[in-house]
Every structure is written in structure tokens, then in C-alpha cells.
Image 1 (spheres, rainbow, N blue to C red):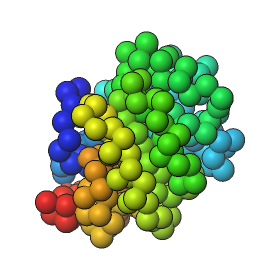
Image 2: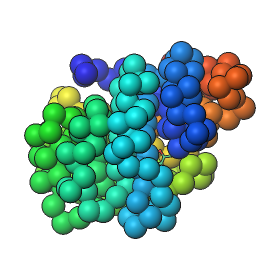
Image 3: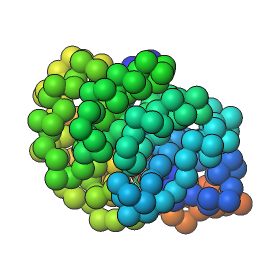
Length: 225
Ligand code: DX5
Ligand code: ZN
């Protein structure tokens, strides 16, 4: 995984058909996805449950791009090795998930993955100020995590603040929640390069009719071009 700041669209399979992840991933990658975003929820850190490391391992062979695993779980540390073994390229943990986020990021890197740190909407940018030497990605949540299809919380100023803090460091800024062709431009202007999009990519399409996935991805790409 090489680093660059070009805009990458990362469809979240939270909005895909859970009984057909392999085919959904093939379709959305064929339609132009740059990364695949995988939302892991535990029913404890967030009020919803999705799936764990064995599902991640099962879908891994179907991903040709980048497997971007977003852990909305607490605790994080006991599960890092399992998600790394499942083949995650990026593992993102929440700064709010425990007392020792620095240790979690170290463990993610030690297990061979890129280390991401996510911020809930209510958490200030300064929460990652002392983590920038050990982070490969900062994820700015623009919804309260737990569900797809929620309305966007405008946090462009926080994104710009993070972009300034990051400077020349090779750290991605990812946005997660409510990304559409309408909300994406301001986020990219503020400094985001990875745009997670669930409902706005998967809406209107299916594995038997995947063309809308491509049209939806292209609409976001065109809006930020
Ligand atoms: C929310 C998840 C997101 C979600 C985004 O807790 O982390 O990745 O899938 O969904 P949309 O794009 O529909 O807001
Ligand atoms: Zn996510």
C-alpha cells in the first residue's frame, strides 16, 4: 500500500447485501471503488452488531483493492491480531474505545497493518496530536458511529485543523458518515483524501444491476474533481 493524497472512494459494505459480500465487493470494485471499508460493530461501543474477524477473513480473498477495517469495538487490543491475520490492510481503532490508544496503534503496526485512529464527532482534533508519529490514517466520523444512512454532521473545520496538524506526514484523512456528492467537495477542500460512502454508493443498485454503483461513485468523484 503506497501513500498518496489523491481522493479515494471507499464504499462501506455496511450498505451491501450481507448474504452476498463476495459478489457485492466484486461489483463495487468493478464499478470503480478504490478501497473497501469494513465496519465491525460490537453492540457495546456502538448500539449495533455486524460481524467479526472470521467474516473479515472470508471476504478478504474477494477484495482486490485495500481492505479498510473500521473497529467500532471496545476493548480493541485483544482482537487486533485476529483482524490482522484476517488480512486487513488498514485497522482503525477509536480514540474513545479505551485508555491506551497509543498502545493499540503500536500493536496494529506490530501486526503488519496500517494504523488508523478514528474520532467520534464530539471528540476534538487535538485528541490525536500526540499520536501522529504512530498513525497512518485519521478517520473523522461525520455521524455518530453505529448505523449507515444517517445525516451528515458538518465538521470541515475539524478536518482542516487535522490537515494542518499532519503537515507533510504520510497520514491519510478519512471521512466516514453521510458522504455524498453534496458533502464531499467541502471535505476534500478541507484536506480529506479517503471518502467512505455506504448508502450513497449502494443506493439504487444490486449485484444483478451494479451500474448504479458506478454512477454513484462517479458522481462523488466528479463533485470533488
Ligand atoms: C457508521 C459506519 C460507516 C457507515 C457510513 O457507523 O462507520 O462506515 O457505513 O454509512 P453512510 O455512508 O450511509 O453514512
Ligand atoms: Zn466506518
